[in-house]
Amino acid sequence: MTLFVKYDFDLVCKTVVKEQLDLLNIAHTITSLGEIKIHDALKVEKREQLDAALKRYGIQILSNQKETLVERIKHTIDDMLQNTDLRTVKVSSYLSDALNYSYAHLSTVFSESTYTSIENYMILKKVDLVKERICNTDLTLTEIAYQLDYSSVAHLSGQFKKTTGLTPSVFQRIMKNRN
Image (cartoon, rainbow, N blue to C red):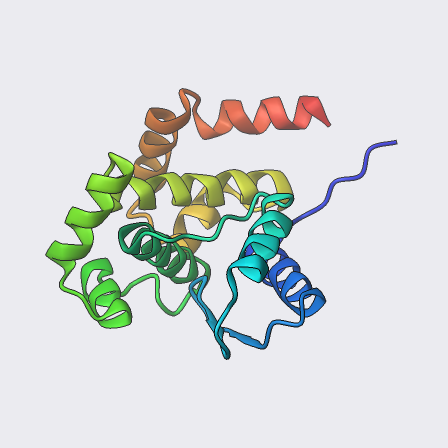
């Protein structure tokens, strides 16, 4: 028997982090965008325990300011793509407003750290959302294109093929045959 599950990775990560902080009795507030405000000074020993506990789940504490900013950019883009009200907002303006940096600075830091552009990251994330909808819904490609604000099905198909090497239709057939 095979079960198929859907994950909300943001919720899973927040839950794991909260549980580990609570187990170590570390007073904290989890904010959005992967930030945790620690209320009291964190001793080196506790920090190491927390780091080790989180690593078991594939969660890493970032110590570099640029890494932290890149993660905040990624979280902001992910939130933007999940929120239907924000999909039509210009990405550069939204990121600048949300993170209080110029888009030029955000773009430079992101590209230097990830070796790709913010635009390419967004395309990859949108293709992931297309895959998710193909696998988990009965929506047509036209409906998916509309939901994700593609200008056309052809545009969605082009980005999908360029990213995955497959057309959405071929991907859909493969997934149906797999099930």
